[in-house]
Structure formats: structure tokens, C-alpha cells
Length: 332
Image (cartoon, rainbow, N blue to C red; front, side, top):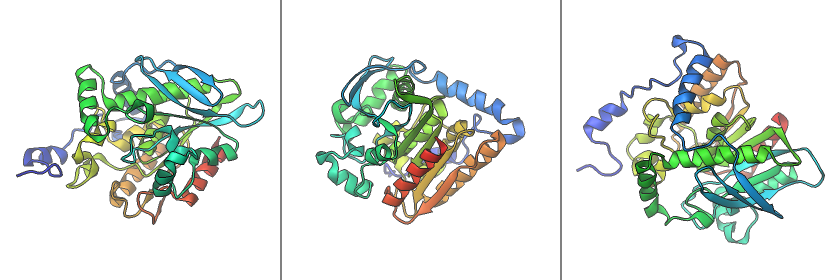
């Protein structure tokens, strides 16, 4: 009998022979031809996303309203002085804990345990503020003030979104892109110097919003990049369901791989780190994905991605956070 971590034989055959007809095929033409084709299909599958979110700011508390009608709250912290300041869109992780969203990246008493486990005790938001960045971080759909019921509710939320013609992954992507556009329009923010940063699910969101949004000039993505077929090996995360729906865009699934999507940001500075022994991101697949991104960047005439492995598994080390901050500070 098949278990949730195994594919039936006919699906395993499909896994081994995906069409990937939207993936970058360098023999079929130049980078821009493939990029336009992939971007057109992906973007058309998203909920409304091209306009900036609207919002209100009271002190450091921000509430944004998206084109779908959804709302999210979070924190918007600006350095002292009029600026214009560089800024970073901070994208929180999954972490298996839904009671907090944006708070995971700030020095909040209720998230000390999460930061100890995933961020080596550091508050990424403070690290960026100390480096002179403005930071914006919001609750993603399903976390913090937007909880929908934790693990058990993720698949129901995804199913309902898909029944209505959208997807859970698409909703998150659209909101992050609209948040980036809102950030670029704020007084005191240098619209040409905005980056994205995230770890784990936040790392997925960081390269994703860089690929979609012209407002993101560079990104730092930690512990989320690999090839789709490898993430469907027995025991791998995409076969587990639930959280996987946050990373799967139905209209392009099987037609383009994760590094192809990230490759749409090929002309922007890109920073990737991953841990050896990461239970979510197989090392061989990570290296293969990074190699493909590097090849896409060469074809686009963009900078080579900054990639490296560390020995701490699925963790954002202090040293890794410092490297990411320095990378974005230099590039922005």
C-alpha cells in the first residue's frame, strides 16, 4: 500500500518525464525569449498583483490591503533621518508555528523560541535596521493575525483557493509583489534600492518576489532552493501535502522548475545559502539548482549568483545572516 511519502508507479513515471516546456532551453533561443514566455504564463495564473497594495501606517504598525480584498498587518521600521533609505522586504518562514508571522523576524518576547531554533537567536529585522535599512514584514496568509487553523487547514485553504480559480502559492506571490510595490512608494524610501530576504519558506518567497517584481533589485534566499523532481523523492517535503501547496503554482507545475522561476531574476544580484544535511533541501539537488540558475544568469548577462553551503542544516546561522545583510548592503 502506498504511503503519503511514496508515489504510485504511474506518477513516478510522470515525475521522471515531466514536460518542462516552459523551462529555459538555451538551444531554443536567447534568454529574453524564454523569460517572456515563462513570465507570461506564470503571471497570468496569479490573482490580481500588478498594482501596489494600499495601506495605513500608525507608528511602526502597518496594515496593507491587497487587490483581492485581503488585509495583512505587520511592521514597517525606518532608520532615523529623512533618507532616502534602502529597504528590505522581510519574508517570514513557515517553521511549523502559525501563531506568529512577522514577529518571528523581530525581537519579540513571544518568538524567542523560534528565533533560537531557526535564526541562531538573532532577530533578522534588527540586523537590517542596524545596517541602515528600512524593513517591512507582514503576516502571510495562514500566520499571525491571519491564522486559518494551522497544518490541518492548509490543504482546505489551498483547495478552496483553487476552486475559485486561484492558488495558495499564487495568493502569497501576489501579496508579496504588491507589498514590494507599496514599499517602493513610501516617503523616505529609495525605490531603486529595495531587496528581499527570507529563510526557509521565506527564502522561497524571497527569490519568488525578486522574479516577479521589478521593485526588488536584489535578494538573499536562505534554505529554499532545489529541483522539483528531487523534492518529490520518498520522504521529501512536496510529497507530504499540506505546506507544499504554498510552493506549487498549478498552471506551471511540471512545465518549469524552481530554478527556472528564480532565473527570471537573472539580471539581479542573487544570494543563496543552504545547509549540509538539511532535512528539507537535499544537498545534491540544491547544488544542481544553483548550477542551473548560474547558467541562466550567464545567458542573461547577469551577475553570477553568490552561493555557498554551511554545516548547520536547516538553520539561519548568525554568520549567514551577517553575510546576507552585507551582500544586500553592498548591492543596494
